[in-house]
Image 1 (cartoon, rainbow, N blue to C red):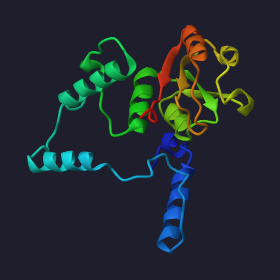
Image 2: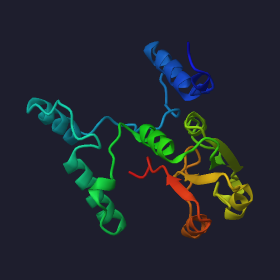
Image 3: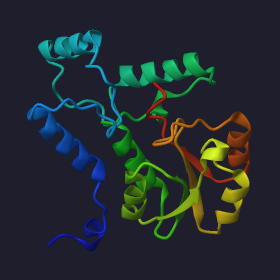
Image 4: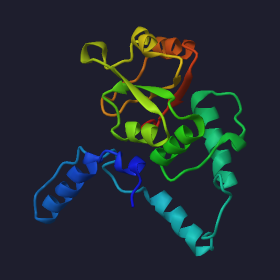
Length: 203
């Protein structure tokens, strides 16, 4: 028997659209894919070669549970070099299979039953499912084209309650592509709530 929690998950329609588009491609139709967030090029040769080398030398066993230590160290160095951040302890880095597992793990670690999470509308369709599955309640705030689809900090303030646990941002945002400007980022930080930032499209 499937739990009520799982039955409450709304379908991710994007995958239905992708599967339909792939079926049309197999039938000979030329398709421009705008449904899933992935590059329009194949995995670069240097990455394929590194993966092949790892397989050939036997790197096929369990790693550290938080990720390969050398990879975690490289991630901290990337952020320090690219963003001018203060030194980051690699012990604070967790490697996941993608951004969705990372977001799910973060929400599971932070949310208690009934905690509220503020997110923009529109947003990535999976966010509310993740929040609800972890016991939280999504609180959506409309964003508008005439304001660059930017959060308005005053609007966020009116949606904050004693149960608000965190504010969700996605720079650049899915699906609008907007980037929050520095002043609004600071205003959001000044609200004093946890900020969860999904930066899947930074690279």
